[in-house]
Image 1 (cartoon, rainbow, N blue to C red):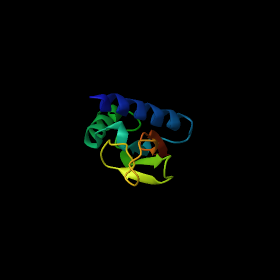
Image 2 (tube, one colour; image 1 turned 60 degrees about the vertical axis):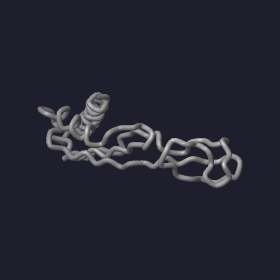
Image 3 (tube, rainbow, N blue to C red; image 1 turned 30 degrees about the horizontal axis):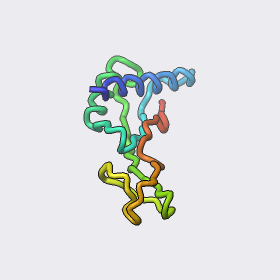
Length: 114
């Protein structure tokens, strides 16, 4: 379950952010952007986040997840398109000359503290 390791890293980032805020007392919210291609299971990540925050200044914080769709650009016809499955041929012209524009993200967007 790689989601637990991810959750632990997310909590570490949140706590480091908290440490830069000398007068702040706790983390209240962490917003995360997750690309479709990362194959992160949202519920497993939420469970891991709950476990990783236990006993820390982030305990009780909300984990807000934003899913980023898999968007691919076709170099042949110059169009972007969103994929639901991992078939990287252009849905417009059939070309295999494509590149991923989004969907691989895994980033802490922001941390709210109180």
